[in-house]
Image (cartoon, rainbow, N blue to C red; front, side, top):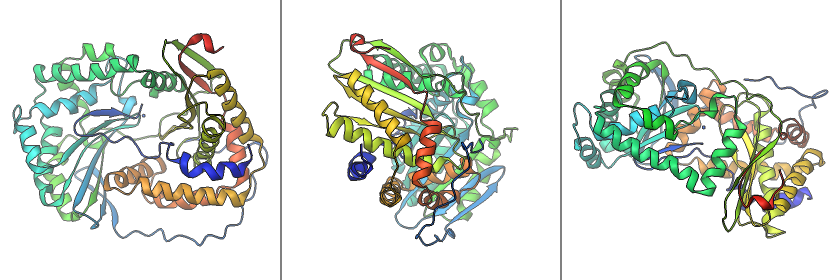
Length: 463
């Protein structure tokens, strides 16, 4: 497909690419299922000239500091009364074993049913009076526990948040109740074709990697976890060395320091050190088929990309977006073979891009996917067209990160993946320096060995 066609459909297709992390609603537990040198072939191309003026990367509103061993990033935003607090418990799947999958999510979710200061339903009533929304997101690289509320109730919301984190009751009745809820969610992966194809594709992409473990658990692991297991995990793993706290909103630094020092800063320090996870091993492309008699068929294949700390990461990010536009145009717009066709992006320390579609003609769609991938690896792209595409990419990226909660995640990922929260601002300039040659090179280097999952009529595809 000609490149200018991709530019024209980019606005409609780009929003299908998952830019922002999954945000949990209420106390529901969600999963985003979750450093390498640049390895160029041949001599790297010289950076292309750009007409963009250098960006001012200074940000007097954002500071980083430590309180009682807890690392804090604070962005003072006065745009609204909403305050977002996100505590990152680092490690994600690397803190788990096959037997303990889901345990951290279960500990935090069970804390909703009682603490020392708020026994039983008192903790839910207290939270309701503040109007705050508690958030738990179990992801591949970390678990986020936090809340979103208004600044006028910040102290009260914080007290409930800290109490749930530090002193959950974790009695057997509450653990059993929450465990059964999580088990229901896990079982739905098998009953819902879209959830199943995502689960299978993620497992294929990260086989023999820590990401293969499920942060929200499996049927087998959840069924065996007891209240005693959760209390032992809480005692050993809720340590300040695993914590990165990000606060975005109209709250002064002095208040944050006081509240942290008086609550979560009193937890044991521990000896945890954050590092980036290993690069997934290179594996041959494959397809796994799960036969289902359903009206449509679900296809999802992933290819793993450069580490989020790699200089290739910005180019890979843009290349996946271009592929998304091409798939949308070729499969949905031109051939009407799917109501949903795009290239998902797994935003992790060890990221992946992919190709997704639902269709009644899977063989033809897979053929188009492979053709568009090959075209991206070989096309002579236009730098001018790429400039336009990147600017739209950046506009949509900022739109996706308008909320305080999204900004907290934006800053945390930059700090943890790139070693400095200011990398979040530099990322925009990194994108603007991506060249057409960079797109073609990363497509060749990373967009290969696609591992497909297929859920649908097995007679319609050939492995």
